[in-house]
Length: 241
Image 1 (cartoon, rainbow, N blue to C red):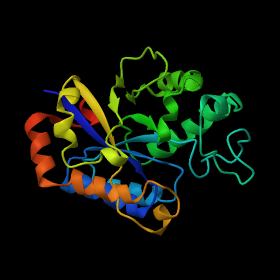
Image 2: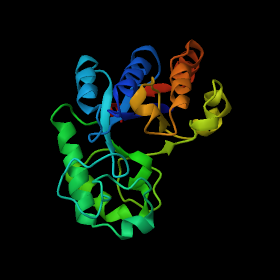
Image 3: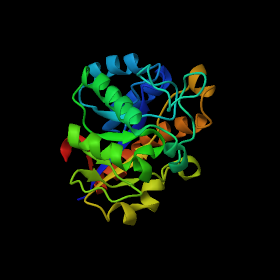
């Protein structure tokens, strides 16, 4: 039976996101999350995680939202000290890869102070970009953690977990899992990217993907989806692989 990891991205983004993810864990099908160590809700997220130790937590490596954890970076930030919002291979070409490595390690080390890290992924899937391959290879060599797949490049590493990112935007429907069951069943283990959340002023003013998160939360905590997934999959986390 396929091990299905319903991972809630963006833990730590803000309090409303944190509460939504914890609710999706306690009342729904989420068993895994990844935290953004550089966001204003990080400390709050770690407090909630301590109260919910069954929720596996990885690091949502971030170089495209808010500010870095480190303060001595030059190539990664704009004139206001914030990350560039849109990261492409062309943008990475203009960055210092050592600075990226140092920042991502700093984020991982920050999370390690609070919890045993289950795995790695990244905000906007930046870790999958070809130009970041040298950085990611150094990261996995140092930390030896499972990592979400979807790479533009061939990563010679046994702990890559396949991922689907299609539960998003207009595809967020109550019958998403039924419609896609044949695809989901093709994998032994599969990570489903999700973004359940409640709303507050911070998230409403900082991202265009806000209202849709409440719909994701509603679906991931629905009795219909819980029964369907438990009947057809082994709901898992990165701790189980």
